[in-house]
Length: 174
Length: 107
Image: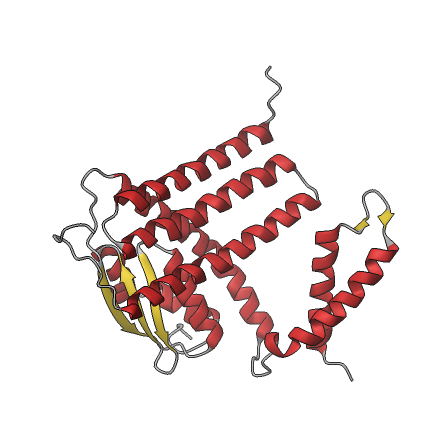
């Protein structure tokens, strides 16, 4: 019997095909049958190849995590805008107020998705770029462009708490 | 009067913001003192600059399959850009490139 996750991947792949190839257009009543069949075949092949990569089989409460991730993204986008104004200010200021340093800190995060999300978020937000992550201890090595940006990660730890909340790990306030 | 609609104006605002951030990234690439700080300018400003430019194109294009494709582009830029920046940074760090400290001469 086919698993639900397999069917879900197939549907996502097929919707992706439809959106990119524009073979179904309900507004104009336009249906390109050959492309729909080809798309189904391609989606089936892509599903069978990528199934083991996309579904690791040890995730639970996926829907709830996805919803929380969707709530996290707007906050993250706002942080990205702030990051860009911060960098623009530092670059265009005549004296260039930068004071780069490398910082290290531990987190309570352990799962791959949570670590990846935090690493990407750090790279995109004000004045910090992830250099390396040690998954076993949740240790992050981060290059910060100024002391204010470093303090946001070392002292406030807002981002770590938010990511932990999204992936329901320790330290997420639950 | 000039045949410019509201959507055109909004898309022009978005594109102008995108160009501003791309130019800032380029200026940062020239002005900042070393490899790591230059990555800050390019890695961040390029992400938002590209996304704003594409958003402007989406609004200009209106509701069609083309704008859906552009939305996918934004998604993939947001996934790929931080990973690329991180990979370059990690490679430089483990090759032994020393980060610039305040007060040193620029390289």
